[in-house]
Image 1 (cartoon, rainbow, N blue to C red):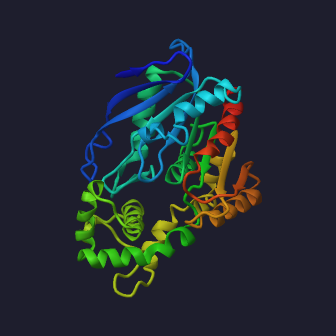
Image 2: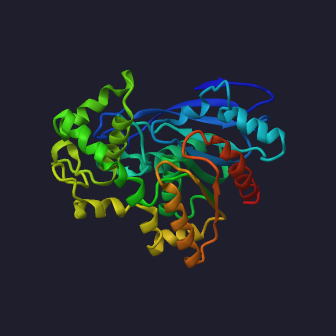
Image 3: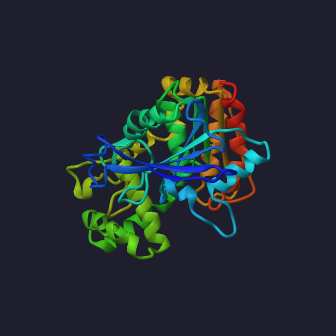
Length: 338
């Protein structure tokens, strides 16, 4: 366990945790992970505090929230500033490591990636709360982390009082299908699905092109939503490699994980209804077309009578961490009363 203490700011605590759920993950990723906690100034281990679980975006991990930026703020600086300004009170922020060899994570259980929902909520959460008691919980994230936050709230009814989804994946037809051409070309260039999967391993040591990044993202989605250990490369792709035509049976498996489809199922909808806060937003110029899925979700929630707060803002998908200034005070107002 490592401690970094500053009397006027949030303190950083890091634990090593060995996961049984990840021990047999198909990518060979490490089962021992670091989980980082941000503890408020004056933290008293005898007290229970509200906990905010921050799920990382694709391409990031929990410790990415702590990356120093000379032109911006890391999460420690942000929450310290918000607390000093009286916009939030004392909360514990939990930053799990969910990075994978495919470049990221959707934070669900998948035969092709690993049992990450089980790891986070059934293993890591009790580990953290045994050492740092929680009075209430929120789950939050941006992009893939936002997707993970929303889906976790849907699939774990009663676990959270609040959920925050910043620019999360939804409306799969518009956010994933437009990039399928990149996946087809890069798989062909690599010499097949299995060869492309193997090529992903070396990406940490070189800078991939925009096309390769798009293909990587979609391959990771295939491993998440349509794994097939018997198939070439361990996945079923939702498009025909020769013609690019949609393979509807495979695509339907993807759509089953789209929040726009999930919210139409009674159990998932009722889980959202049980939240004290459901906040989601999206930039009006989001490059992955996530705005349209977010608008659809807001409309579906309106029809179902599920309380929520949906906002748009004048920006795209990247470099929007300033939106935490909007959501975290809302989370605090809810969790302080639980």
